[in-house]
Amino acid sequence: MNTNLFLHELRRNTFSLILWGIIITVLISVTMSVYPAFMENQSKVMGMLSLIPKGALQFKGISNFNDLLSASGFYAVNNVIYMLVLGSIFAIVLASNILLKEEYNKTAEYLLTRPLTRKEIFFSKSSVVLLNVFFLNLVTALAGFISIALVKTGAFSLRSFMILSLYTFLLNILFGSIGLFLSVIVKRARPITTFCIGLVLILYFIYTLSKITESIAKIGYLSPFKYVNLEVTSPTYKLNLLSLSYFIALSLLFYLLSYRLYLRRDIYT
Amino acid sequence: MNQPVIDIANLSKFYGKTRGIEHVNLEIGEGEIFGFIGPNGAGKSTTIRILMNLIFPTGGSARIMGLDVVRQTREIKYKVGYIPSDANAYSFMEVNEFLNYCIRFYRVADGSSRITKLSKLFDLDLKRKIADLSMGNRKKVSIVQSLIHSPELLIMDEPTTGLDPLMQSVFFELLRSENQRGMTVFFSSHILGEVQMFCKRVAIIKEGKIIKVEDIDSLRKKQLKKVFIEFGERVNADNFNIQGSVALTAGMGNTLSFLFSGNINELVSFLSGKKVNNLIMEEPSLDEIFMHYYQV
Image 1 (cartoon, chains in turn orange, brown):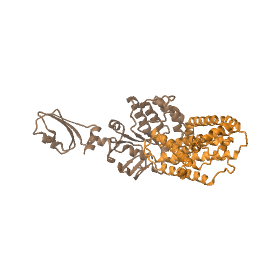
Image 2 (image 1 turned 90 degrees about the vertical axis):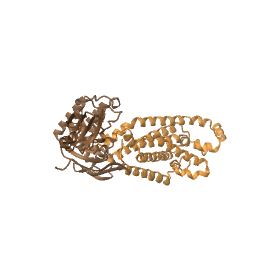
Image 3 (image 1 turned 60 degrees about the horizontal axis):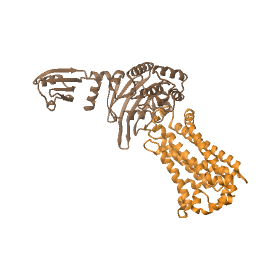
Image 4 (image 1 turned 45 degrees about the horizontal axis):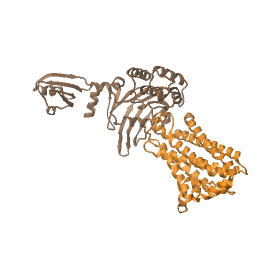
């Protein structure tokens, strides 16, 4: 890894990291601020929710009304889109641009003519992605933890919260690896941000659709979101080894493939 | 020749089925100022991009100072400076920030003083943002970044585009002094005048193949002449068929101009039967010699 390049990339992405961190933190805080009012009017809200078709609630991530009664359950159900979807969009957009932007901004001719190997460039830049995703997850998990701590009325399982945060991190890392992979297989250097955002949303849509439509439930396994366990209120909630292996294996596969392809990639500007 | 600074052997690059360069062979010695000329699409940039390991060859090999351009690119780049044809540095950076970022990649003790010295020479405002610079000023930044680590070899792809004549003169003066220090220069251009003025030896590339490598002086000393004839009557260029004449153009109905590399006696003998008002024979410019190579 090259320190000069690593620090340069880190500085370059700081603003974006701070912005995303603020946005997700604000969204989580605002959502969790509703929880005390929800608990005060529990019976009314439950009555209203029972009128909504089951499918629509499942689409929102509510499979069991009781999930909403605990602060961590409320957090998992209502913040899933921020933690999982926005975090994944952040990861895939950052990763897909970190190598490719040197090509479409025509700066590759400066970077790749420095005394650096492709290996050093790849590891320096991908380390920045890893660190950014880690910090975003850290900040949003802290925001989630603090907001739960402020509004909780009953017991709160820190262990379950940590497992949920780990799932989020693993999912974001997988999308980061997919982003890197897409950037090294694209033929003509151009931003692929829209495609990457679309991919995350489509995979999330497949996941939610598979949850509400039993006949296509198996299609859900095509989506990485399926492997995230959101049932934090379950007493048996734990990190599933199969899911863990899935995230680690796929992330490594896309990462190593990206590395191999980048080593032999023709760089045009 | 000692070990060549650049040694290209049978180098080829195909983009799928499309030809980039084909069996290019070149040897450039230490301290040379070597010109690489050809029109757009001839393969100049492809060759340079392989040397800089931006793209990979599909055949052959290239070595710089004995080091393989693919496997030992890191070691090579400590010794090489590069001026790309497009001067697009990081637009969000200030000039000073960019140059300092560049120099930190090298083991240079006097980096800051080198930046200051070169920037003064090119009248560069170090505090300005790269995004706000004109094309000419961006080119100056590109030149400075290529020389800050005092390279042993400078590879340039169309380096003077955007530079005003005054800065071109400063640039060439600097290159001469760096060359006297021992720096080798590989200079790709389609502006033949600057190659003629600056280089000692030149390779001409056409459709991906090197068609000639020659000393600039011997290129000029070729028996190639530029001929202009004004006849006393209308002439048809199609009827003017004498061995050794190329790039034949007719003008005003009674004039012909062409490059001539044949036997002058034969030309005189051919003209003896015609009514000639004026005959001018002169040394062709490099541009015209170049045209000759492209037409034969």
